[in-house]
Image (cartoon, rainbow, N blue to C red; front, side):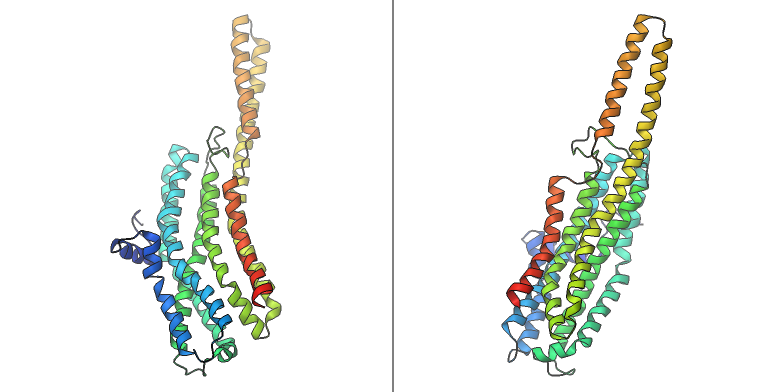
Length: 346
């Protein structure tokens, strides 16, 4: 069981840096923790300075930005995005389900904090394997064989990058599983909620916030294109892009569609109850004796019909204009780098 103040190790490291810095979270994390991958990258470039090309420097510098920005993205998810979602999710759950919300938040925050290493280790091994499988690419860039000392900072950068981006992938998995579990609760649909989405915007913002943070990984796509173009695996470049963009889209669409289906089911049950009440009232009106009773019953019937129409017309897909704009930008970012590689670098 975790406490609300408990965070993943990388967030705890970020907090330690912030506590000792005169700046805010973003500049503190970027300038201190983000400096580590920058120094590793520059060390590597310095050690192969006699043969490095400007294109190699630009592309790998862009890819290194993923590792520079990654810790702040994870910190923000851990201390802002996830806690805010859990707090806002209580608006759409009955009071008796607040305990269930707390249990779900505890379960999946603990999952995020303690189970990241499965994906991080696997992903890091994949990256290291990719380096050695495509070692000819690095030889052409200036690495003088497997014993070249220049490999040391580069492999350290690959390990750091694998750990950080692995946590990012784990973040998306946590978001999807958490939303799916909350969707299993008997949550409410509030037609008067100020978000105009029955209170479901909390789901949409949680999903799109995670997706937006994950889309930072598209900064590394030009590096993927460059490796593929120099090692005979160019035919797989577009497949990689499709898989990545697909993951970006699915990370938002799947959990929100799941919630949408559950919300429709809940609304359907609620409308069925109101429909039965309307039929029952109509029968009472037909059997009423006094004019006064008929007038009161008709007023109640009118209110029920208004409620029915209000619930029937509410939009239950958690997609507002601001969420949509973030989704489009998350998709356009990797497409931009595809165009950058195709028409600028090449």
